[in-house]
Figure 1 (tube, rainbow, N blue to C red):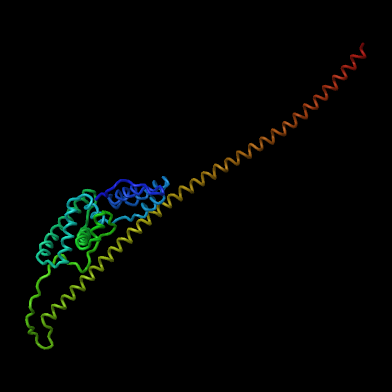
Figure 2: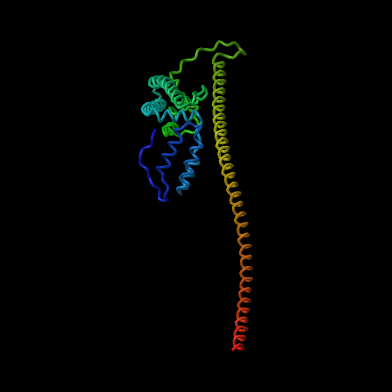
Length: 309
C-alpha cells in the first residue's frame, strides 16, 4: 500500500520523501534484485551528498521470499487488504467480548479468506517470476493469521515492508469459538487405570507441547532464513568491496606507471638541458675567442696600412 503525503525536505538537506519512495521501490521488487538495487540507490544518495538518506537506504534488509509475497499482496490488492484488516479487528473484538456466535462466524470467514489471499499471493509472485513453494505459502498464511491476531502485525503488514514472515501469538486461536463447558460424566476407570478425563488431559498436554515445539521450530527457521539473508548481503557487500579494491589497485598501478614515465621524461629533459647548457657555454667561449681574434686582426691590418703610406 502506498504511503500518503508528498515529499518532505529535512532541515539538514536530506529528502525524507525520496527515501520513502526508494524503500517502497525496494520492497516491491523480487528479493533476488534487492541488494544490488539497494546499493545503487544508496550510492546515488551518497553522491548527491545525502549521507543520512544513504545510511537509511543501506540499512534496509532484504525480505525473504514469503515476506516479499505478503508485501506484494498488500500492495497489489488494496481493497482485499482493507477488508482483511477489518476482519482482523472484528475477530479481536469478538475475542475480547467472548461473543461465541460472532467468533464462530468470523472464524469461518477467516479460514476461507486466508486460503484465498495466500493463493492470490502465490499467483502474484508467479506473475513476477517467483514461484512460491508450499513452505513459503505456509509462511504467507502464518503472516495472514498473525495480522488477524495482532494489531501490531496488522500495521506492519499494511506498511508492505516485511522482512520475514510473521507468526501469530500462541494465545490466539481464531478457529475455535468459546462454548459452554459440558458437564463431565462420572469416570468409570478402574483403580490404577487413568480415566478418560486424565487421558484427554494428557493428549491436550501433548498437543500443546507439540504446538509449542512447532512454533519454536518456526521461529528458529525464521532466524535461520534471516541469518542466511544477512550472510548473502554481507557476501554481496564483500564482493562489491573486492571489486572496488581491484579497481583502486588498477588505478594506482596505472598512476604509478604514468609517474614512472613522467620521471623518465623529466630525467631526459634535464639531461638535454644540461647538454644544451654545455653547448651554450662552449659556443659563448668560441664567440669570445673569435671576437678577440677579430679585434687583433683588425689592429694588425691597421698597423700595416699605416706603414704602407
